[in-house]
Image (cartoon, rainbow, N blue to C red; front, side, top):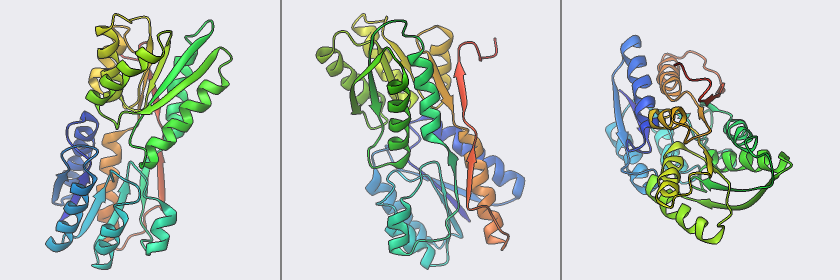
Length: 283
């Protein structure tokens, strides 16, 4: 039995990941059980899930960790129990993992910094004059959130007319982004650009901007959710990034199967990200 452990199913990104994992299971003829926490911030719940899977003696755990550090101890327990561990999406902290002895864990993801960079760069290119920009960050203890923040900062810094005036976390959540966007608009009434580190936060920001009648503020996101593509088509969103969620899920299961069979698997697989804009969408 292979367990796919994800952060939540409230974000459609993880539904795509599950779809890919189940496709791999069907193709490869293995059983997969999916376990998720209630929300992307429910790290303690994800820890308990891993601990339960150790007690259930699953053969492998494919995990998208909600926190890059706090999941390492239970995953070390899993590995010590002979369970194969595969890390997808958000990288476990390599320094702390090495310190605790969690080694030889294959990683499958994308270059999150580059993905955020190309999305924020496209957003910055819409500014023909001086523009104020803000970043909506993910969970700050997650490596992918920090990488996306760095990428957006680099894009805005390189843009000659853009000034980055704030960077705040909304913890990947649509409702938190709605609230944070309201506070940012109060403090920065001349705000022009918003880069959100995932589409859920981008959608929350768009909802708040619409409520405030601030539709001239331009927004870019990350994840290529169906709802984000709809916002691209109607011009509310400038860009998003496809980070191949289904492919990550598929390869996670495939790597687990190979590892269980004693076959070699790559230490790291970095999938190409795809910038998605209104122009790139199929009519």
